[in-house]
Image (cartoon, rainbow, N blue to C red):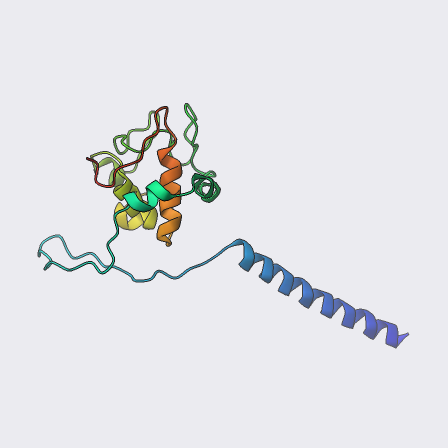
Length: 178
């Protein structure tokens, strides 16, 4: 009798360890965590920063124009719990994103924005969306958006390309708002 008890305990231990490893493997496969290539600290508003040459400053327009909107749609799934992408869609925790490119910032009807976003002004350009999607809290300090951002430039470009198609007359978004 004791041998069957030890067998059951051993089998339970092996199955538990196998389950832990399987869950860990699936979690790693489903969620990719990538470290940023470099962190950029913005200088204080008072002292002007000396001009710095950007090593690989590529305009946002290029990856957006060449992006696969299917990939952007797939990546947008992370956003769907808080945002709706369809015309006339309601606001959720975040505003509806239909026709976001070229739309005035903090202007979705019926949505109450944080002071951080309400005070920005201007319209959403591809460059602004790229900066916002990189780190919402760095773009608009004090925003209520809890999402940390997309670290990969190609992921942001795919999402911006997808968002650019959310319009009655989709057009390639410009990077600088001109």
